[in-house]
Image 1 (cartoon, helix red, strand yellow):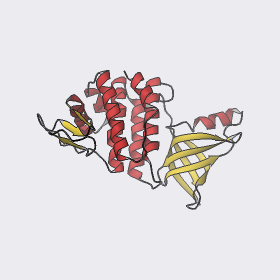
Image 2 (tube, helix red, strand yellow):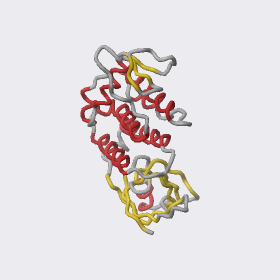
Image 3 (cartoon, one colour):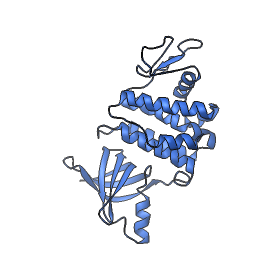
Length: 246
């Protein structure tokens, strides 16, 4: 049966001599894998098709879907949004790859969540259009707000001169040091509270951070994910991102 849906490319691997298997987060079906034949042929049309399956690409799809199959098929595809900068700007591309890897590691089930899809789509489009000040803080914003959809968000309850410690295990601000080492405090906790209250990416330019603070927060947020998602591991894209945004 054919369905019209949108999809965000997460991972593409070569299959045979001319084909690829693409993992996507789709609007209608959540995480799905698609076999796409002939996109790696040495023709101008094929090379253009292969470019559409770069990680982070936003596509419109006509797909065959069978709940009993793990590998689905695509009948038609085209760009849903054609990036102006993400695939060509080094910093934006690094942020994009970080976002893609964070998504890959966070998805544990294929179930659809249309609100999550629209959040991700909106985030990539904002990143493509963002200025440098917004781009620098964008991975922090994305990592924090993404947690809402996976059920382990941090509660925004930081008050002036109190609750200046963020317990990463419990996901709460507190005034007492926890009995474990998984916490941040001071400017790191305050900045996290600011980021949580930021509802639109354009507001990120108002949050001024030095490279040390930004690197420490990226590390803390990776730890937060690892504490709450089984087998999360470590992000391969993080060291590159920290270096580029410094």
